[in-house]
Image (cartoon, one colour):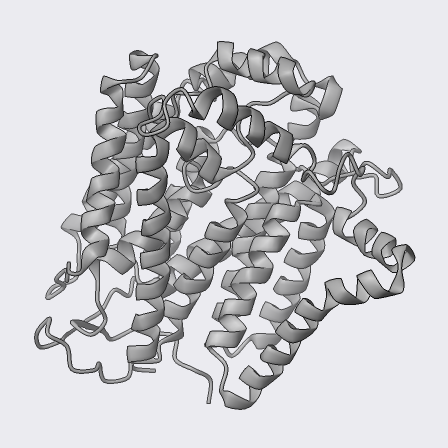
Length: 452
């Protein structure tokens, strides 16, 4: 299917280009990205046995790894190779492809990158921050280059492929190692990574499956994939991923629906708003049942405090944000060994990060960085939806849903700024929105138009 004719735009006359890679080249590119992150993120099939959970983990080893960034000695090399691959993709960009940088979003994004780089000047650990700033800049170069060769649908395929591989390997590894015990009330699916990381990976897999199903003749198989992803996501008991996924799917269904379906989604939204009132009127029994469902089988350390998050955030704001409210402690420079030990002692549970992407940005880059970061997300979501409205190409709606998921889930978990493959996918989506306006460049194939 071809994209709808672009609307009149001050950007200039649109050109038609093709991002499409043939099947083999696309698969090789995806496997290169997956392989590089497999090494850099240190995935392994016996994660639960080697890393353990809860009290079985070696706290000192985790503190040292988090404070020094030593997830793996090959990580800097992998990031360098990823940036080099991005440059190769830029050099092999389609003929006639041109960027269309306009509006406030590129300026805000540039300001954020500058703040990240300059944070070396005021941080407490310049060597540590310098290494992490270098890694961030390699991510920027890689995402900038790759989007010159990958279409929006290629981004969906990458989400689907990596999520499917991670989910299947995680399930298989726990079955093979004998740690897949559904009868255990404390069971969470870890597989090859932490349960929250796996939950986030599965969430973007489900979003991609929903989007790809719209343009495929194999809709039943994508439906099975969605069921597989949802089942595994429930087993991770990652509430942040579930809440973010619900927000992303609501955006996909509501903003992409025709009028009749939109009315139905408004009805669902109304029921969601009525729910708390029903709980209040009909007493504690109904509320208790819903609380158990929300906790997803995890121990109710405190539903009101988000499993200890609110006391943690209050402590971080009063003791550390207040010290450097405007510029923070440097990019990924707050969680040093001393800070990890002191915060952990104050909260009586092992804390390696703020359990919120926004709080981490506030600690690292202060109010200036947080405002720029939030503005990037808002402007990217608004612009990608505007592109969908202009072209009726649902691949832009997928990007809107993906960024919505990231924006919502980042309230409760560390996403987008931890330099993992999930963060890289988010950066690819933002780079797409910043660099390519579909009203200036008409993509020949592939596109994702509304189903007839």
